[in-house]
Amino acid sequence: MSFTVHARRVRDERLSPARRGAALSSAVVLYRPFGFTWTHAYLSLCGDTRRDPRAMVTALEVLERSRTARTAEWAEFSRRRTTEKHQAHRRTPSAADRARAAALRWPGPDLHHAHRVMVLRWSCLPTPTAPELRREGLTGLERAVMTQVDAYLATDRPNPGAAAVLGGLLPRLRETAARTRGGRTGSGPAARADQLRMMAELVHWDRGPEPQPADPATGSARP
Image (tube, rainbow, N blue to C red; front, side):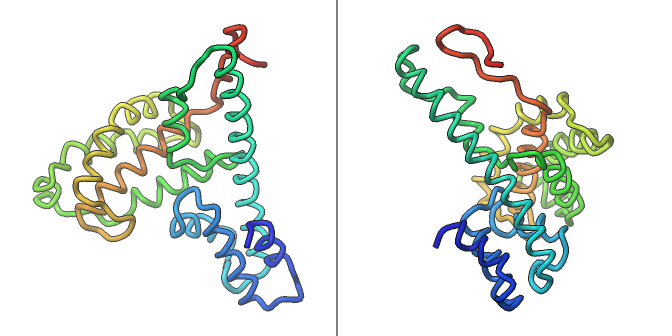
């Protein structure tokens, strides 16, 4: 079933809380910017999304705002790619477009709040011991990432400096996470490698308003 059908069931007051909660989980299966587990974790800030219908509806509205923004982004990307192909003969999306499409990111007006909440949550997870980090070659990455994460969390606003530094570390972080076969839960070195990658991605993509892409026809930014 579609996201819209599950959303309708979440709002259907004739259904039991259990069925409405199951419908919310099904909606998250279809749209999960942070993955299923961590998207649910973020939505849980709205209240008991398994038993409280009001919390379920509030969580659904948060999820819908992000999904609407993502849909608009893809529509704009599709329109821009059509223009690029016809006017600039650019058959392959740019590296920036590919990175943005693949990024761990919460599109929409709640981006900063969502990213900050999850970075704070991941930064507080148990960390491996120093020998474990050293054995997996994570000591330097742990220090480098957490220095920028601390700077990001120090103020309640995007931190372009930290975003730039962590953007430069992302290739190495992704390679390390893949090498250690990192998981999204747990406290071992493998899980930590993936947590460092995820924190770096969220800080990197929380950079404040993004400049509008240039119009291939004129070379100037769109209004």
